[in-house]
Length: 423
Image (cartoon, rainbow, N blue to C red; front, top):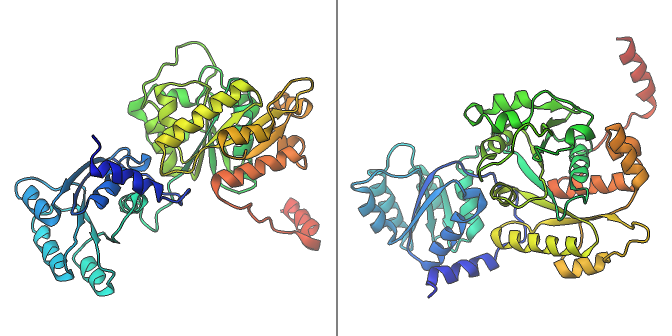
């Protein structure tokens, strides 16, 4: 039998916007919520299931301030307390004063109240409350408030993770991931890292014409050494704004990993790099599923045939169900228009997946073959080609950014270039 809270969770999820702004995930913290309404408890419970609070330990109790007072008379307080009040402003302030006597140093308090009152807000903040939310609240209100406690306004934004995976092997997902990352770095002027997660057969090193002596294998097999400095030393510079965390692409060992094997690596990259593009192999394991669920945005690459359609739909449906507070995965159709090959039309793909493709990339063997053999990106081989423009579009879509403005040199451009050469 379903509880009132479970029913309210689904109602709360239905009211969420299709896509929210980038919210940095919270660290490993303990959260205790004391609610007075079933609706608020449902929103908090749903927030606890969000990927951005995946590391947090959440406990929910009914009873509001009365229950909180009883709980902390003989127990330490957690990192975060969420406290709901349905009473009058003066009762709220009295309750906070009594809670202050029980709180341990460092505990942060989020208050959910019914009164939209500036004077009350000022008094609440003066008493050290970290945030005041006006009921009714939804899932993202809670997620945003808790995560915001650990993202200082003047701090460098936490990096955004973009995961790219193929619906089937051989559909060109890696090629697209590498070209999109190149465009993010070059066209959007955004510092980025490509992480090749196909440790046995990865091609990122070949595509970028890089042969670094170290890479992601050195990190994943040395979990005790992982920190931002260690991971930074493993990066190979591809361009001004693009670095590579390469796969060894050798078979000298077996690459079996636990579900959380890459968590520390991703956390270190998030702390120092604005954008991380993950090139995922076509497989379904605990760690690939965990990586997809934790990503900020996902791009599925598919070819226009039946197996790709089935696999893409399975991926989209599974990820949508598990990521109810996130934008649904994007998908791109690649290798479209191979001569004499029967293909499923993009319109039929869109109907089956209930979404239009983010991009349709035609079959261009000469262009892609030249780029692959030269260790170059499509934009380097043919910068004005329509496919290069498609990668720029995907870069903007996945990052939510517009193209960086490029200054016009005008008549002084050639003169300034000559002067730089003489210096």
